[in-house]
Image (tube, rainbow, N blue to C red; front, side, top):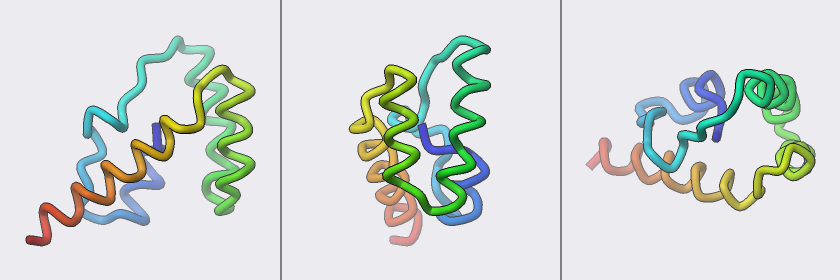
Length: 78
């Protein structure tokens, strides 16, 4: 749910393939999500969540994915 490029840049060592960060989407939905990532890279989290909502994806999924990614970094560090 959180873009792999974003995770690799801002969460070094995170498991980008964590189950809570994966979402199965159609190719057209993937293209729309990729377009929405521009907001994520501008640190416009509210705008990104609004785009997710517009695409029919619950914004809470992003929150769970971000927490799981953060936790995966903590696990590797300990």
